[in-house]
Image (cartoon, rainbow, N blue to C red; front, top):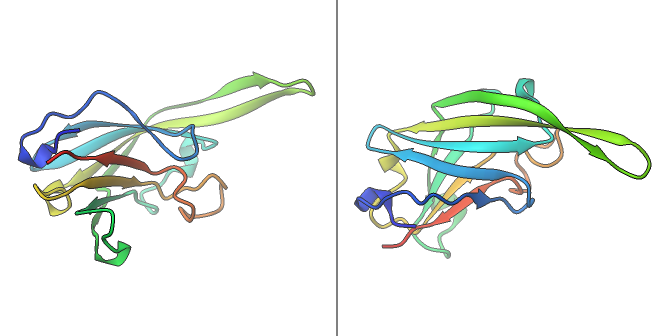
Length: 146
């Protein structure tokens, strides 16, 4: 995807997280705010809280150490919808909840610069409901062209 900090257009595609289920779409970018839409499976609306903000990270290259990466916390989390998918198994029917959120970050140029190569949307909820973002399994990643 083209780097939006250099005037590039956002791509229409979704980033699928390592868990194979979580989907993220980068929906807007300007000097004031960058926003993303995400579908988080196995979570309900009441599980998502500003007390556990998302983070936006900007890597210059693959070798950059995590403790040296620019990062900012989300400035806004809006629940767009929530519900459940009913899945039939051989033993029984099961309900899998999901929540759709819009996550925004103020002043994204603090993280996304003309030299940024990778942008990570860090989700503070892991696949295990009680764990706090330890596995990175729900995170979204975009590779930016220079």
